[in-house]
Image (spheres, rainbow, N blue to C red):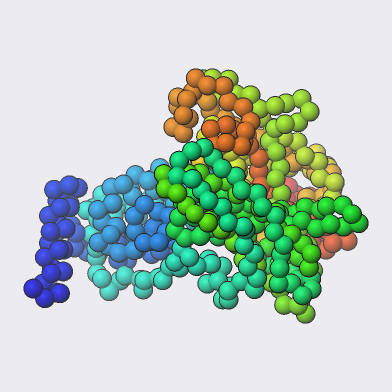
Length: 452
């Protein structure tokens, strides 16, 4: 039997399976009349834009969604996941806060409607000529930023190796390593943390790192790079970077979780991409910083059995600042967090609110023209919600008291905030530049909207 005949036979068998399992008829599978929603013309472009990055043979998704033959058996499940907005994973509350993000993979109402109509009409292929050219997705061994920035990392800093046992409780690896290979100060424009592939990605719950530097006998620490599912890399705002220099160290905090298979010699790596030496950025960033949502002087985390709880963290900015990203972090009982700013003039603004899903560590990257500019004295309020009841599908035991702890079975709640600090002159420049950009975009400022 030649290749064409085998393909025809397989396609015919697939159609019979679709009829038996999903109620799709062969006529519907190939239907394409005026106004029809088809895979080739309508659904495939949506999957390319928002789904295939994870759903490819080497992605973190449980199935590949690159071709019609791969997608069609999952059509009813895809309909359910997208109509409930469970997929693609994007947990920002669309009703409050800033909504413009560089990495927004969420589907529009129109895209969801197209997918629902496609499935309800029998998931037709349509005209194969309408299919978009296939995309070539990177291997799990590749640096994601390499394809985006057009070059490999300028410097790679590995952790020391660690043997992850096959079975047991959470494990942590906290080495401190020299940043070798620097012949002078360099400004970092982007970084990416990558466990080994494939087993390293499976056992690594998250991998955080900080730059350590000794200045006048005192150790200074700056949050640098993070890895978690949904959080592959950091690109700093335009004309903004973080300096590393000879003598700096990288302090790792890597959380491993056994998967039933021993993993020997696991090593995580941080890739650094530099600004050209003769083109340093204008501004420095403090990178990712952890802002707590509890553990103030009068509050500790204690969540009684079969209860819901709220905690808040209050942080007063001692310098002018710009926030370029935020990322929720909780464990199994947490359900989400919000970030509010109380400005020195009394105005209150919700900067963002996002639900929490233990399987995802998504960093929400603000578009440059909406990244919050916060004057000195602004109060940041981080509110966190917890659900220690049987209604929480991730809750292992609603009859247990839950307290703070590093283990997955304990609870933790803080927000990673990408933040930069500025003196008054720099901040005035950024405010004026923001107003200029908004005017070019035809977007009114808050004062203009209020008639001020």
